[in-house]
Image (cartoon, rainbow, N blue to C red; front, top):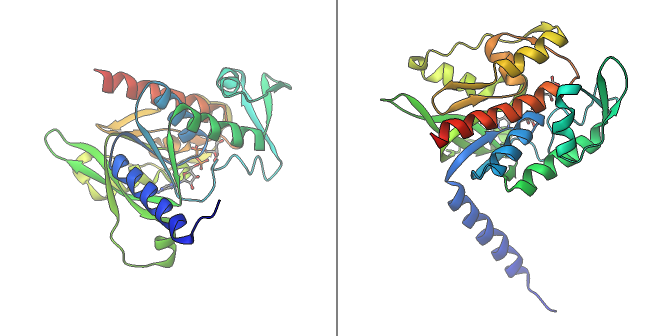
Length: 257
Ligand code: 48F
């Protein structure tokens, strides 16, 4: 079947533009395709929300691929095993109530799980600001830019996406909550910065503190530690999965009200 080069271009531009038009207004924006963001996106899409995940890099998984110091294994605790298994990820009990997972398998299956549930993942896009509205004061979307434009240091205005909820799942730097704290002082958000390692305590607290920061803005995963000054947990990932599921459940509760 003959085809022409111009049609390859037309298909790409037309289909992408159509989707950008659709996602300009979405239920939930998840920022970051690490373990917390992908888990949140999977459950949110399963609950029936329109979900868009923006990921800065051209790859999935955040810190998953690096395992622990590049050793290709991930550890989760018992509480998170059922979430991993829901994604079809194989777990094996080792010791101390810990389960081991192959890093590549977790990365591939969390990503596939989010997409198969209906979440739209767009790679190579960085969220660099939020939209807010007063009375009632709330976050109502994000500003997005091609990561390549940011890396090049070009002065290009971003595009804007309206949403009912934004999830900061950006990891250690809590980038979305941090920009909101810095640029909208009336939100009275204080980003404490994460503490040194205390794995067991951190795994517990990160899940406990997961949820709404201010109306319209939620935090999940390692970003929770940064926002609330919790200790880091190191290369154990159960808290990330549990946090992703918890933020999805809270958003479902809040948006269905
Ligand atoms: O860092 P990341 O894996 O965060 P997480 O889901 O999981 C943390 C663990 O990997 C590990 C740990 C606990 O076991 O200590 O570090 O909380 O994934 C965050 C993703 O967000 C992307 C980033 O490229 C990464 O893939 N990201 C960060 N900032 C932005 C962003 C941004 N402003 N816009 C878009 N993507």
